[in-house]
Length: 433
Image (cartoon, rainbow, N blue to C red; front, side, top):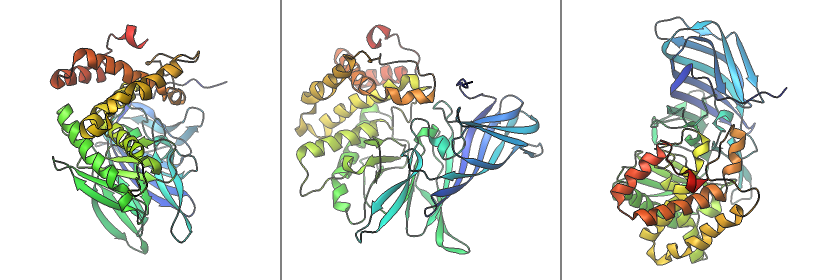
């Protein structure tokens, strides 16, 4: 009998994840140590987390002044993508720590923590390790409450080869050599803001980088394959201008100390808006200064603006559940035009909106298998079905109509969209249905 999907129980609530991960690039496995600060809201004898293809070796929990309780049984469910950790007695209410030791796989599929093959100048094939957690694949890297509403902070530590670059959402707090392992170093990153699991990101590989700062002093780094720093200059310029534009337009400071743009050799999407560490398919970020066309530069400017818009819409303000994906993607798809029109006026980008965005929405919307912009999502397996031109392009077209009607009074518009994106259920059924 097929198991029925249901959202995770809320007896426990995550507060902070402390993750220590050690990738083994030659064997494509990693070892993980996790300590989750939790609030036990309701006494229970079991904890249910999301987990896929992770081998949990042991688990314990300790709540405030009570004794440590060791798990008596750990039961994974491949079908439900969960693991249930059973304890021999009730976990008392209060704040505590859930500690888990486990082993995972650096997979071939471009989701979770996966390996990306590249070739160095001598023709040798090597592998980088990158993450893609949207919409629901953080569970392939660490046991977690892998739903967007379950926000927490994250302390991430990576143990990596000394000759590899390690990047994550936040800047590096400290580094040290590993005693007894001269080829390794431990990289500790600063604590993240409160955020959803699908926005956590890290990368281990061989990269160069260039950097600049915005008017407000935000650090922006663009990483490139070794020896190709020149190919990152256009994306760096676009990112500096775009982040400056959005900070002024939204009148909300960018809350992280840096933004990294990271090209990944194998990447299924154009880009992914991980907070503070945006990942890109290489051809959606790198520009050959000698041979790239204006249309290619325009396309990369659009992608960079889209992902940086998400740093506010999606990352800072997040949907409670995937039903409201269109508010993430539709608004980012609209505001990319606002941004590029302001920072690259020579592209006359609004003259292209109807043909490039609205007509794309019409094309899919004319088919029998079309759907409303906002549709119920009953399980994570259904989310991929709505990452389409309805959510992106039709959503952007509806928002453009509203923007044209309301006008560009930024203070009023920001208040309106802030309320909308807090998901207080706007009365727009006649428009979005």
